Length: 334
Image 1 (cartoon, rainbow, N blue to C red):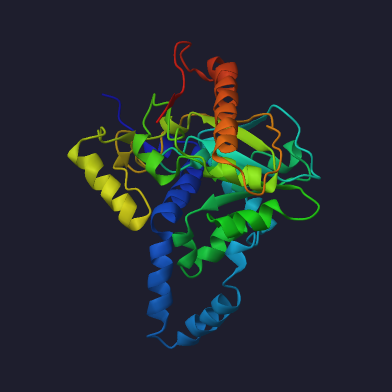
Image 2 (cartoon, rainbow, N blue to C red):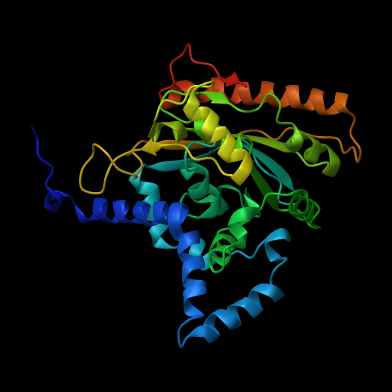
C-alpha cells in the first residue's frame, strides 16, 4: 500500500488544491456564513456595519436583475488560474461571435457544481475575452443566492445574474450588443443525474430558453462541457428510488437540488468533497440564427427546439472522440 505524503506534493499543486477548496466552500457554505455574520454583527459593537450594508443593499436591490456588476479585478484573480490548472479546464471556440450582437448560450451539462462553465464564463483564467473579444459573458444563477448579504456582491463580481425573464430581457435587449447570456438548461434538477459516464440531459421539455431567443431575436449558441460529469461520484439515486423521490420533493420546495456526492479529500484521494483532477473542455458551438417573434407560437418554439437539439448533437458528435468519449456513446434526453 502506497502512503500519501502531503509534504512531497509540489507547491504548485498545493495552491491548486487550495484554490478549489475555497471555491467548494464558497459554493456550499459561503452564503450561509455571510447570513450568520450579517446577523451576528448586529449584536456586537460593530452593529453599524450591518446597518450600513443593509442601507446599501436596499439602494442596490435591483442590480442583480439588471445585468449585475462585474469586477475585472476578481475575474482576473490568480486564484482562478490555479483552479483552472487543477483539473485542468480549457475553452474551445468553433465560431466567431459578433460583438455588435447579443447571444443566448445554452449550456450542458450542469454537473454537480458546474465547475467548468464557472471558470470559463465567470473568470478570465481560460482567456474568454481573448477568444471572444468584445463579448461580455453573464451566467444565470438561482435568485435564492442573491438574497444573501455580502454573498450577492461576490456573485455579481464574476458576472453572475438572476435567473428570471426580467434579467434576461435586460441583457438580451442591451443596445450595442456584445452580451452573452449563459443558461445552464438542465438546472439544479440535472445535477441529480451527474456521475462519471453520464450523458443524459434534461432538455426534452425545457423550451423556455428557446422562447426567450425567439422573443428577443438573438442567436442561440450551444455549449457543451466535456468532462463536467466526471468530477464527482454520486450515491445511487435511480428514478423511482426513495432517495430520488426525496431529492425531487426537496428540489420543488427549496428550488435547489441536494445530490449526495463525494470526490477526493485534501490530503488523501479516496473520499472528500473536492472534485477529482479530471480535465474539462468547454466547447462553444456555432450560433443558430433566430428570427424575432415577439409572441412565438408553440409550433415555432417546437421547431427551433428540435433544430437546437440537432445542432447540439452534431457538436457533441464532432468533438467527443477528442475528449475520450466512446464512439458508441450518444447524448440522451429526458
